Figure 1 (cartoon, rainbow, N blue to C red):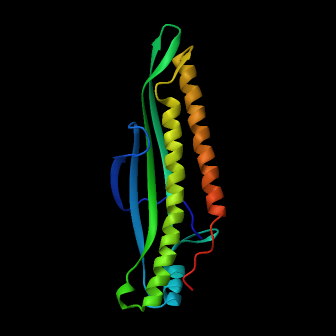
Figure 2: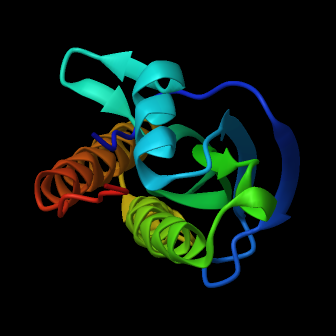
Figure 3: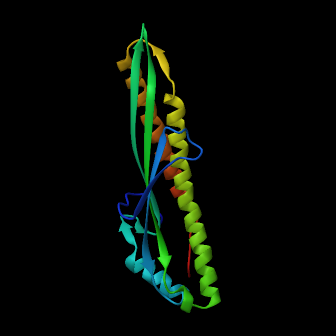
Length: 185
């Protein structure tokens, strides 16, 4: 089963989210686990032996999203405005690697490539959902202004950002529930 959950090891790099505003920071960590085998069945068996597990079964791949945001405000007369905002989205992405491909027959390599492309496309879907939520939070906060106190605006923006993340998690769950059965067999 493919799950999006926490992954904490791997290579880390930071970049600005391409489609998002410049104030969205994306921190992506990639990690892998190795699979062995010269046949589809051997790879499948190794997957069931070495992949992480949760209550629903094995975790073939996963994308975990972790959020942090910081808004700065300035009072102007009887209103408040956001002077700066920083949205940080940390993604932890786990995918398998197959290390015995050089010794396998062409049919097994083709089966692996098809399996891996489907798995990666699914995990990319999780990544896209998280990036879209980051863009929504940025759009919500960037240059926001409201009558009243800065405390009221801050509370309102935090509630709205949390709702965006909650909606994103529901979209993640829907994507997870719609996965086809990927198979190496």
